Image (tube, rainbow over all chains, first blue to last red; front, side, top):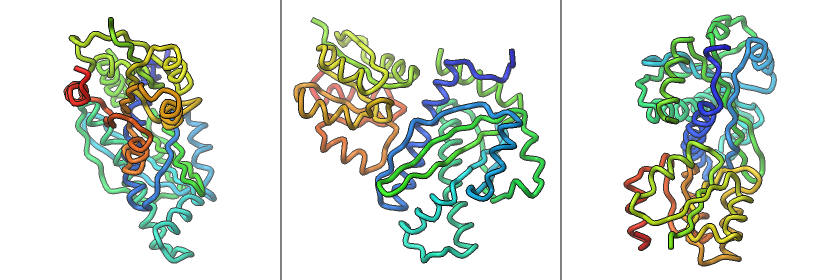
Length: 193
Length: 121
């Protein structure tokens, strides 16, 4: 059996943790747009290399950003944000449309900070792991950034944020080295136990 | 007679956390519900004089349960325990008649204080 796969209990615990993290992300987002957001239950899945290849093939409709972290667990959090959602959010935030390239970048990095920040701070505080988050950067997976494929394990956390007029899908992918996923699994066991 | 209490949350970990946080000296009989419909069924079956309620749940969410309880079972005491901490969600929860809103992850001390405040301990 693959050592890095999550057990049912570990998945439930991680899902609950992500629920808490995404609740924090939703609060930050709601403050930006001054509107209540309905959150879906986050789903957790392990992404295989072929899943990753598929995930990285949606450049036309998705913005990708990455933010690396260091500490007892290390890796990077990738945020995948639907382009439609970004534009609708920008309108709610009173940006003049269409957005300039700089404004688009600013908005995506802000959303990435909210999403991956909440995700990682949730993990670190509830599992009592110490991690530091670096600055987020945008990236284009079609431009041969091979390093994104180099992590041994990628956990895909998917959540949908909906508000009355539209809904948008945000995905956060936590990519880790094998040692880190083992540390994460051990911490989840302590929490469940 | 133990007080019938139901913990409604789709997450097993979260239900366990609430169980652990319930004071040992509190005489209750605990049932569990894993979605909003099961929570309503528990209320209907008399298993929930007190309902610990999550908001983000499948089938029916916590807001739907609150609306139901408000119109059919006003005596049920609902304590919402949720990760959805947006000010507007908290406002909505309060307007739907919940006794208290507690933020996840639930702290045992906070639950004890809340039970004291609402006169349940």
